Each structure stands twice: as structure tokens, then as C-alpha cells.
Length: 321
Image (tube, rainbow, N blue to C red; front, side, top):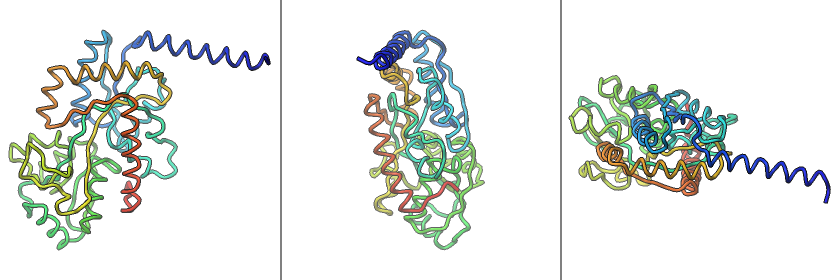
């Protein structure tokens, strides 16, 4: 047997042994969960609650770090290019399955450079308006926008964000001319509608529910195909625009080369955290739905969403501008 081949096998076995040893010792130092958006949004709130539970279970410090910018790409890229040992984790969401379709020629593709540990939630978004807006229903909003082309603004979390794509998808199907006003994250976007800076946006049920219940935001429609239990009288967008559907989801992701044992350990710890009394209570209060998955199921979900949104973006000529 050639000596070079034996050396190659020995090197491969050494690397495998080191990976297994690292996995067995995981975590060997503090774990950082990167939230690629500013504080205050749904991903940030949920990530912090989960980090607190994981820290207690893993007997190791688990901290949350906000790295906003570029529709979540700055934080996602930092995690993708970190050491693949599970000590830097991304609190990612639907943007992972959308971003690569929007940034042609970009050097970073989160759908390829990140792998999943587990989904955490899968919930709807809500089309909301300021109470002073001159429309009270979805049909009235569409009619008003058609009668005032280029004069109705909508807010988003920034170019290429899920609310941006959700509104552009809506705009395309409704055949209305809306003006995009980007903000830096979910909290500033919601605050802009609360303050009347923009009349309307699509945001997560997590970010909008408390304001809807307080009468500070008017819900026009939901992005699921069925009404929400919390708002049974608010219709789905698909009732007026057939085919429209958007699920907002969150999960934790690691660099693509992370050992399977580390991914499995993280998945196990996430499941324990989400099932804890504290996190379960928070998720109920935020009106979001728990969806726990294995690492393999998480990857399959992202691939499915990646295919779906690639078609939506191409068919509707949606851009990140």
C-alpha cells in the first residue's frame, strides 16, 4: 500500500479523533449566540430567554451578542466564518432562505455556509396599520393604495429583510405601487408605525401582538392561510390575494463544518430550554408557535424554504433595494 495513502489516512483519522474529542468536551468555553438584528426584536427576545436556560443546563456561560446590518447578513457571515466548534451560534430566521437570491454575485451564501441545530418557532406575520390610517380592512388598504400610486409608504427591518420581501410580495400580487422605508430592525420598524411615521408594515406576531391588543396597531391581515387563534376575526392575506403565504421562523445555526456531535448536543440543549416553564410561558405570551426539529430536519426545512423563496423572488422580480 503506498506510503502517501497511509499518511493521508492517518491524517484523516487524527482530524476525526480531534473533532470527536472536541465534541466530547463541548462546550469548553463560553458560547456566543449572535442575533443579526438590533435588541428588542423577536429573535433577540427569544434568543436571550433560551441563552439563560442553556447556560444553566450546560454549566457554561451563554451570552447574546447583537450584530445588526445588511438584512442580517453581517451577523450571519460572522458565524459562518467562525471556528466550526459550536461556540459561536447564529439566531437565524427566514432571511437565511432568502438572502442569497437577492444578492447576486455575493461571496456569502448562508444557505450553504450554515447548518442547523434546531428550529425554535414558526409563526405568522401580521399586516398592521396605524389606527389613523385611512383604511380599516385589507380590501380598503388595497383600494386606497391603487388610488394613490407611489404615495403610500411602508416600513421594514431593512433592505432584504423578511418584512421587506413580505411587503414586496404583497405589492406584486396586489398590483399596487408602495414606497419602501427601511429601518434598522424590528423594534424601530414597529415604532415607526406606532409613531405614524409610516402607515403600514408587515411584522411578526411576536413584535405586534401587544400593540394590537392595546389598540395601538390595527391588524389588517395575517400571512398564514388560516386566521390566528389570538385574532380570529383578522383574515389571511390569501383570502384576497390567493397563493400568498409567509411563515416567520427562527432557529439556531452553526458553521457548515461543525461536527455532528456538537450539532446534536446543541439541538438537545435548545429543546430542553424551549420546554422549560420560563421559555414556554414567554412563547405563549408572544403568540408564537413552538417548532422543534433535529439538525437534519432543520436543514431540510431551510432547503425547502430556499427553493420556495427563490421562485417567489424570481417570479415577482423582487430586489433588495
